[in-house]
Length: 160
Image 1 (cartoon, one colour):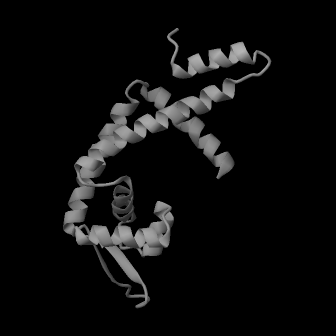
Image 2 (cartoon, helix red, strand yellow):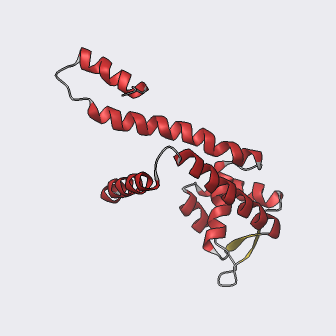
Image 3 (cartoon, one colour):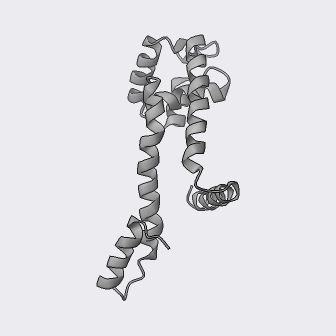
């Protein structure tokens, strides 16, 4: 069996602390390394489209929602502060990707929607993003991917 970086660390711990089961470090260490590697590779094609991860998240949230959303709905979905969302929306509006208009239900509130240009860009970005994620998962079979997703779902459901 080929040893990865985390196996080497675990072997060192086994030598220094044979009394301690460090196997949880194997899971968390690998997840951490995978997240860092995947994050870099996921960001690259988005940057080529002129999008940050947050830009992508905002545009994708608008696309998924299928209707205009308030800035509050957006920042809750994107896990940004209100101020950070306002700055992000200003930037996206300046690029012509979104527009803000007064809400018909509450004139004190705004609704945010994709423009045609924003819709075209997020449609392109999502297709590239999904294909990139598929490439990153290629070392695993379809069944292994489903098993991994199910295990992660179970862990998250126990903590969310």
